[in-house]
Image 1 (tube, helix red, strand yellow):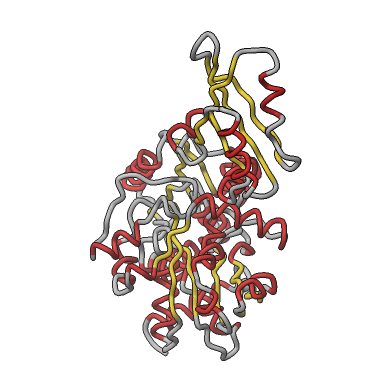
Image 2 (cartoon, rainbow, N blue to C red; image 1 turned 60 degrees about the horizontal axis):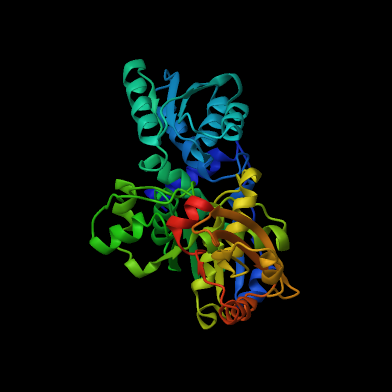
Length: 417
């Protein structure tokens, strides 16, 4: 063993002084659903509930080995990188300055402060991450502090690759047929694929990326790094506008078809499913690899050994209503309609007679009176079987109830739901 794998092994050995290896657990529920032997690499069980602690620790370790006099480290993050950074600052007894956008939820600020204790100072700057990042760079230059990048650095990649080193040992000589990796900036994917490749292991790698932030897929399609013009921030742990430079160098040989784009609403259904069935709390990015299973034909999985990297479990339960809402919409169990509602006594009673025993009105709101005799009404309906909506549509048509289904209209839904 030499070069990169040797460095990963050294990083993993040093890391054991900080936290034990995370478990690789066979999941009977997912195995039964797919016909495969599904293993979950539980990175949500690190001290900071994500794999980000690995890269941060390795970066600090190597920086301090090169210059023991370093005293101040800097990062810009509103999520898992900040928490891993803070934990490592406390471990090494070094000062850390974390820059976060002013809009960062208080829960994330409090957790970062808790992990770093007296060693970390948090500065809230700007409404958007780009402003925050620029401020962090300026501070690092002025103060002589060392900037710790979230993913685009060789030492970060080497640290994240310790996930692969642990997986190899935990499989105890058995080869994984498929390894599914979530992708944001690409540090985890670059590290795991390089380590296993240089060890002579050749599983099929599949990358799970948010549909609203497809930076790796678009970059592979064009053969160069692509900065996204816009992105959906719902999967905040993996919504990155541009794949890392070093990360893409290590991933550019993969085909565009190796990336599975995960729809955000479908991802919510997976999060709710894992919470209700398995009792596992996942953040959106942490559920990406599990959700990507839904894109595999059963024949591709049957009898295979599949490893899914569960990247994080830092879920703010204040988001749960939104996650449940998105899940119901994806499953076709909840829809929103705008009706042209007659302004007469008994109209609502007449409408209610159209509903079946499993249908329930969960939202009723007058939007405006569009005419003297009619008004526009937003009605949300939830049901127990998606097929019930076909029956309802027929009843609406037969009764002359003019309406528009706005469930999938992102513009309208974003404004009024």
